[in-house]
Image (tube, rainbow, N blue to C red; front, side):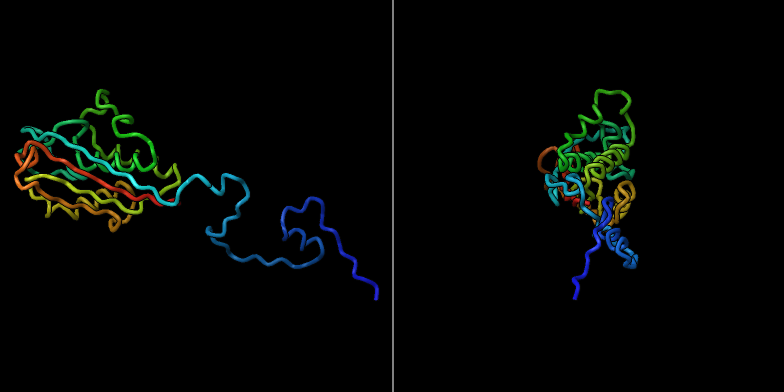
Amino acid sequence: GEPRRKCPPPADAGDDAQVAQAIGLEIALVEGDEALHKLTFASDFQPSAPPVRVGTGYDVHRLVEGEELWLCGIRIEHSHGLSGHSDADVAIHALVDAMLGAIGAGDIGQHFPPSDPQWRGVSSDRFLIHAGNLVANAGYCLGNADITIICESPRLGPHREAMRARLAEILNVDPAVIAVKATTTEKLGFTGRSEGIAAQAAVCLCRM
């Protein structure tokens, strides 16, 4: 018999669906998923962005009389408080540095210079919110954060869950991805002499 004639697609067809419509086929729509997002431009592939990035942070502040003690965004009653940049929340400062380091964005001192009087006494929550926004703008989310606070006193065990909850609230994440631990140095060094408190943090960021 006579061979079937092929109907050429319209010159302005943008995809397969428009080609099918042009030859009279019926198109059905189904709900999609972001995981099936169409990749069209080079920027869609993000070839230079690794799937996981890791950062660490460390900070120390001196304990003095007459200062409030803030750790992980929680005020803790104690005979001494931390003195230093902003409210001197050493744990948040370490966490901010870990997050900034993971995306290669410098450190807390570059974003909030301690020499700038506008940051004197302010809540360190602002620094953590800023770091969280930079992480999101870089295309990442917090996979998990692990914070260790090093001091002889006060005892931080009773405050651990409140600390986790507060950090999760600031970063708008599930508390399950935040770990807060405390340890001593067995009376050794400046923390053992209760001259100051140190904190270290590690974070894992996952590409969104």
